[in-house]
Image (cartoon, rainbow, N blue to C red):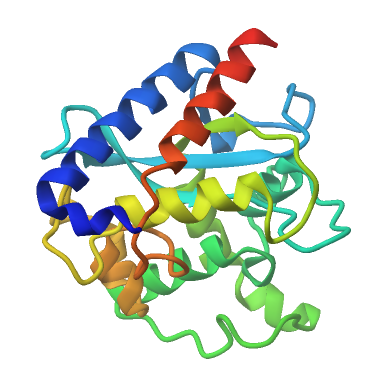
Length: 239
């Protein structure tokens, strides 16, 4: 049964427990900044990541930064994508400060929000799964702006070394964390600031959820996932 049936008070309690677990995770593996992260660092092979954003803080579940995006990878069977592979797609290229929004939905939606906020038209942004070099060159300036926004964000990594596939523990933790954090279709808790860039996103689910996520924001969460999250953190502590 979804914990949303507990009402606002039940969700506040679960949010407090969730953020207490995030604090425990930060004690084990400190938050990193995307722009300064490299493949030479030690990374879990697989895991779940939790992004925070400057100026975005909690107001109902306690004090401190609020999580603005949750993600994972390798949710298709036989996928060989590692955690760093996925994070590096969001970061982009450090040598050019650019990136490829067609390989990162995170980059795509942040770019759309920048375009809308600044009232700029960019007809090729988000078009197709690939683009020829001339088109990509036209998009470099915006890609660099996206890299600036994402590069400033900090994130926590939870190690969950399970098999690739849609039924993975990583997927279970990801979708339930998103569902818990999301304000989509419900009374807002820990709402985004008035200046949050996501207010300009063209995706209603981003705007209403207060997250840089679209999937799972309309779902109820299973409160049991908090125990799964706690076990994964304890496993990291013992490793």
